[in-house]
Image (tube, rainbow, N blue to C red):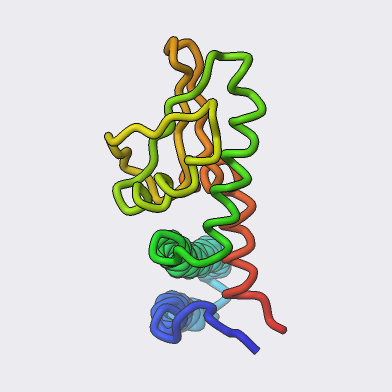
Length: 202
């Protein structure tokens, strides 16, 4: 079971605000009611009625204040919770990208080969492609690209996590097959997945 919901400290803050508002309400109502009890003499009936009415109005004002304070506290709690969740999710996404950059295992070689296969199929239509990858991938790309007649590797690296950028030799077409672009296109889905993994109770 995974539980990374709102911190206990945030709940304490919300409870404190609510309790203070309630205490204020009770204190002011007590004062108003004590004053009203002194107006029991019939000669002060009119004044008493006005006092009672004033008490009722004040009580409603204070009840509204309490509701407002409670709602404010609840909002602060929810905002804090969302902030905590967003921060944790962002950390997961950053870690995922970091691991993608470091992991150059068999899956990654196959990933690059599939990209090169796709580009080779399209190369004839565009007169061939200049392939650019990250500095970390240049040696691997040199080996892989040997079997592709329509592709040429640039020695000038690009700042990407992984994958390649292909530019037609006449410069008219640029194709982005980087991991960065794939993550960008699927970021909402991936972030939602990370959030569910973190916060859904299993």
